[in-house]
Every structure is written in C-alpha cells, then in structure tokens.
Length: 290
Image (cartoon, rainbow, N blue to C red; front, side):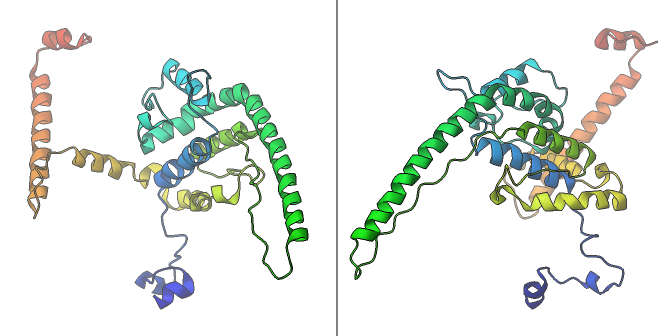
C-alpha cells in the first residue's frame, strides 16, 4: 500500500528486472480500449446521453430515426447491429457491433445526419443562449438588489446563477468522427477530441491509453494477435452451455460434456459429407462437384 500511494502502481517482482519497462510492457487490449472504450464513449456518452442524437417523436423526425432508416436500407455483411441502435429497445452493443458502427456504418451516415440536422440544432442553441443571457441579466440585478437591501448584520441569501446551454451538435463534429474512424482502422490517434467542442468531462483514460497503441503494435505485432476478441467469443460460447445450476466443480464437468457433444456432432456431420457420393452432395448443396 505504501508503494502504491507513493508511485500510483502496485508492486511486482518484475520491477526488479533491469530491462523491465512497466509502461511499455503493460499490454492495453485494443478491443476494450478502442471499440468498447473510445468509440462507445463517443457514440453513447457524447451523442446519445448528450442528446446530440434523439429519437423520433410522434410529429418530428429526429436524428436516430434517420440513422435507423439508413441502417435498414444498407446491407453490411457481418456488421448488422440492432435495428433500434441508440434506443433502449436496441439493447447493449457488443465490441464487434461497435467495430462495424465505428469503421463501416457511422462514417457514411454521420455526415448525412449532421448535414440534415445541424442548422435546426444551431437555431435551438442560439435561442437557448439568448434566453440564458436574459436570465443571467435578471439574476445579476437580483443579486445587486439583495446586496443593497441586505442589512450589514445579516448574511445574504445565496442563489445559484443559471447554467449556460450546451450545444447538441457542433459544426465540424462529423469530420472529427471521421478522423476517429480512420484512427480506429490504423490504430493511431489524431485529434480524437477537441477542447473547443468537448469539455474535460468528456475525456476518458482510454483517450490517453490509445496513445500507447502504436508502440504496442511495434512490440507485439498486429492487434489481431493480442486483443481479446477470441477470449470474449469463447466466454460467449461457454455461457451458452446448459449448466443446470450446478456448483462445487460440477459446473466444469457439465460444460465439458456439452463441449464434447458439440465436437462429436461436428465430426459426425463432417464424416457423413465426406462419404456422401458426389451426386447426392450436388442435390443437397446445389454446388457443382467439378
């Protein structure tokens, strides 16, 4: 604990090695860092929770409605997210879905959405800003009048000033996202966040961690060799096995039996097709044997 308080890191015997670099040799998983980290934060925390992208109402067509229309009209093999993406009905998105959204789908759609809705959002912001300035002037007058009327032996009643409005959609924000999509593809950071558009509260540790990815790719090779996609897929597969709520070691036995049944089934099917005559295989698959 003393070492952690002094250095900000936990002690490891590896630190005694003269060649060990604790920063360079700590692997950051690109899947969690880029897809579930940066892209999810930009899509969900900045745009969905920040009200940049809103759902349709009974009378008004909004940003998410347009995105859903494009989603239904586009065919993205292997990257088809939930049709109600961005809404509670769409559920939580997987890392593979964020990969498709961030590198394939959204780079095409977001510029179109910003082109259609930026002007109305700017008008709403200007109207809110004008209202804020009026409320702020009224607050200043009230504060000044309280100071004049308040007796010296009594404390002044404290009132909070009105909060300034925030932009829902920033001009040029779509191009920043295109740079993010490009950086995701080449695993290098370039102007992922801009201070004049996003406050410090929007910045996350993942925006710093991503700066280490180029060095990690140089050290360990392509990200496909060390990111967590394979492990996450295996976890998903293991969770699908029937465990019968067993415990005390029986869970592992039940999962291994289920795994063994799947392996035997695949071997049986493969053996069946390997022994099947060519003409029968042709009838089943409608594929030429020659």
